[in-house]
Amino acid sequence: MSDCQVFFILSSGRSGTQTLQRLFGQFPQVEMHHEYLCTHVQPLAIKYYLGRITRQAAIHELGKWHGQAVRFCRFPFWGDSSNKLSWLIEPLADLFPQAKFVHLVRDGRNVVSSFFHKLKDECYDDISWSSYRSWVENPSAETEPPPEKKYWWPHPRQMVSGWQNWSRFERLCFYWCEVNRIIEEDSRPLKEGLFHYLRLEDLVSKVESYTQLLRFLGLPIEAEPFTSLRRPHNVNIPQHFPLTSEQMAIFSRMCGATMSHYGYRMEDDYAVNYHPDGW
Image 1: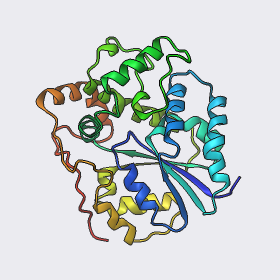
Image 2: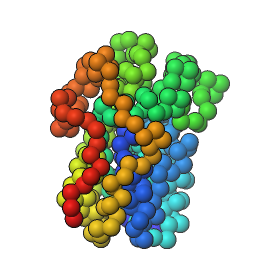
Image 3: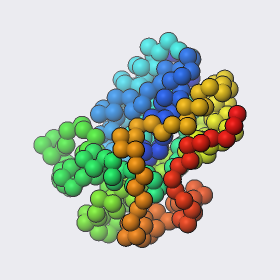
Image 4: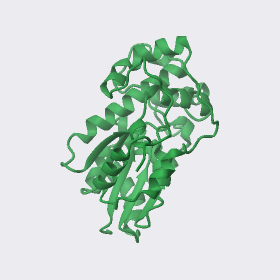
């Protein structure tokens, strides 16, 4: 296998993963991807999270996809920025023992609102959720949904009373908490120096956060790519959708503890500041 440095940007999605794909794509040393082989990886990730496939089986599949991609890489670095991989840290670490993992967090109010308003037909919509639930309750080749994004979003692995009746907004609140919990939990066994945590709000506004990320990955400190962080990426609808009072109450109940854990305060403004400080 190639001796290039492999790294993965993990997040909930709607958190700047495409921004980082664009950022690292400016470095000539890096072969950078966003959601590499998404339709292959997403069903695998959810099946692994649910315990429907073994760790060894996940390693085997990832070896055919990411392993071969790295084998054929002609650059010093190979990276994938993908929320789909957030559930697969364990098999990825087995497959790539020296891989580096970055946990990218964004204020959950923005994440949930962005999913809710901008990806209505792609994430936890009622029809796809019903199909997914049918497979969960009666797994078979006939009930398994096709490998499209809209079908493969998780339900609580440790059953929570009433989850079947959650609204789409509640499903998204659960998802934001759970994916960040899994990233944090599954990264704990990683060797020192292979895991880095940062918040999107800091990355786009503080040079120090940017330079720390580059040092962690072993990339040269260059000023020009930092300017690309001034512009949000993957913004199909350039609007900010504040949560309603009803949504805020639900979010606070389901996500308040996780928000506090990552240093976010419910009373603070939650529009991202894309005006970084000077170099």
